[in-house]
Image (spheres, one colour):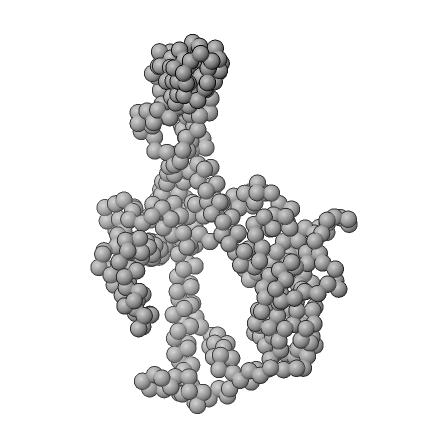
Length: 487
């Protein structure tokens, strides 16, 4: 047997295996014995017909096909062993030729490979975040709202009201669908009860929102889910249904994929409430901190709020900085992986999309029907995001290995205790859950992810210590998944 191995450009390998004729004949004999157990040949007991009789009865092709299947599994394993190739997933029999020499050709996707190159030379400027007075004021306003007096109103919607609504919204196509196209939009006079998930639909539009009993505050600081939404509901009464279109501002940073898009909203008013905010004074501060060892004054409450906002801002800034630094490392790295890995990633995205849609009363099949997209279209939509996220994840895992980062068992124990401390009296009842090795591995992976992101921040600032001897990563291949996003 002669085995030739080729590395292909799409990060797969090809095995070309030339086989001795005698081994093929032995496989045909084995195939015949296997097939004979399922064939009734007149004059012979099942499984007892001679080889030549069986071949004449069922045909040479059937025996050869079974022999190729039998041989294929064995030959593929032998080729893997002799070539040293590390497969990502199952191989595929690409071709079988009988003449001039029995030849099997397999293709196999390879494990991803990462060359970090000079990743430690990456540098980025870091600007520490600041918290402004307006930020503190907004947070204090939210505290007021949490402790506000709320009363049901029978008057039309007015600024500052809190409303409970059913919302259905869709992103309209940039080019209107031609007249006469099929639509499942309901008659405008049809009743829509609280449990009706069959919302109206514009041909070519994509689902945006589908939510029952959504609670919204209609003031300048809560103009969601789109700018202009608040104004569109002014003057509406309980039971009234309003339809309107809004255009999202052309601001990618603020609105991402919705920037510049036109959306249509169908909103039914179910409840209107007035909100009376408590006075923002020392009495208010003392009331909401009454259970603490020493109640706070308004000034002390604002100081604590500023401190908490500063910590949160620093954490966000650090996370953003780590992501930017990681992207720079990815740009100068060499990352290779097969299409099979990309397809698996896209399947994960589609499963998540299906779960999200089901929470809105839809399914992935509904989404494809509404948008007119096929599964192949969705694969194309997600491919670029999948490729980028895979590069980030693979590079992050390789940095983890190259820097020799590990997590001690004591650190895992401390983290588990920290998590349990947040559950108060319920902590002891949950403790047994963290004795499970799978849960400990989850905690280990979370800590490793944080360690490697911290190291990337230090590298980009020029403050990283020298790496320790590289080790095999302790984390799963999915470590750093939370840094990927879904695009």
